[in-house]
Image 1 (cartoon, rainbow, N blue to C red):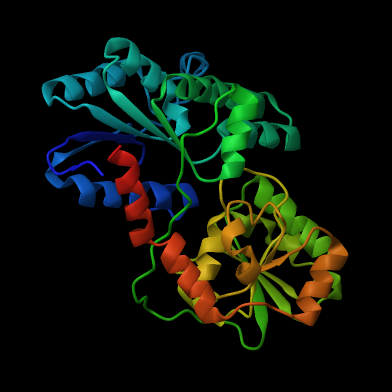
Image 2 (cartoon, rainbow, N blue to C red; image 1 turned 180 degrees about the horizontal axis):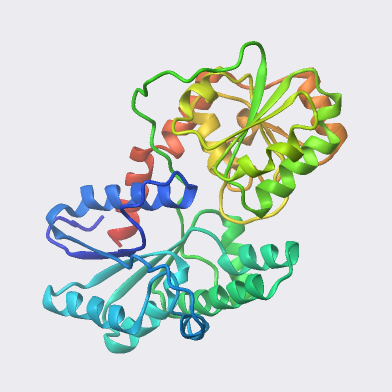
Amino acid sequence: MTDLNNKKLLMVSKDLSDISKGGREQLSRINQRIIQEIFQDNLYLFDTSPKKIDSWIKKFYALRGFIDGLSKNKCYEILRTIDENNIKQVYIDGSNFGKLVQFLKIKNPNIKIISFFHNVEAKFFFDGFMKKKSLRSFFIFIANYVAERLAVKYSDTIISLSERDSSFLLKIYGRASDKISPLIINRPQKESPKTNLPKGNFFIFVGGAFYANIHGIRWFIKNVMPEMDEDLYIIGKGFEKYKLEFEELSNVHVIGFVEFLSDWYEAAKFVVAPIFEGSGMKTKVAESLMFGKILIGTPEAFSGYEAVKSIAGIECSSRDEFIHAIKNKSFIGSDSQRRRAYEELYSFQAGKIRMESILSE
């Protein structure tokens, strides 16, 4: 492993100061902390901080790859930072910055560019378009495809979260990822005040209200919950507006956004993840492992977690399989095994070891 102590690195990301609880934002901030520990004073940060401007001019530039706050001026600003500080290595946080990757490689071919792919964005947004066909969703898909295609073409090293995402990249763009670095999450500090939790046995669904989560939990409520004796609590930003629809069944409760998840995970009997579309890795699975909780989910939910699936939970592909798994509760693996799997594969320290190895090459 090459010594990194005297090397410089520039990290480009967006909304690094955002305190939102989204899985991607969490991972970006954790990776920033890891890279900061590795490079210390030799780390330079550039936050693209997109402005909330909606105009046809913005849409025009987005179709050329300028998305998530990226602009021509910012590309030149980043290049000046590289030249003025003699930086030889750039870490790009997201395949959505492909236009920047292309720009930097053309201006300075000797720069080594490592791109971290949170998802295969083309697949993610195409699936979203197919679920809700509109001009806006099609436009978002095209803009992300254009940017991601450039990231694949011009990056020196591509990091993906899983072998599945690597296969998607190969199928769509003709190039697989160079490195696999699974999702990592931080163990939360002791949280207070304590949440007022429901009494009795219950299980939870955790995730923000985007199309795959909405579709999955709606299917679960319709097909599985009428057969359940236990209560389901739905936790995640944006689900508040589905309260009237989902709470038609007396054993379904929509909580929506909560500031602290720990109490819910610790009190729940198990976690469900009926997810049928997507790419990347699902944060809720790593969180369940961290708290030692069984997760009952679809093959999509367990994608990227193949190494620990046998102890993480039960895989279900149909209504009857979900009902059987929940009613029988014949779970394999112990709480301690699941917590150990988290520490060894998805913790901050595990991520740091992997990242240090990748950036040392």
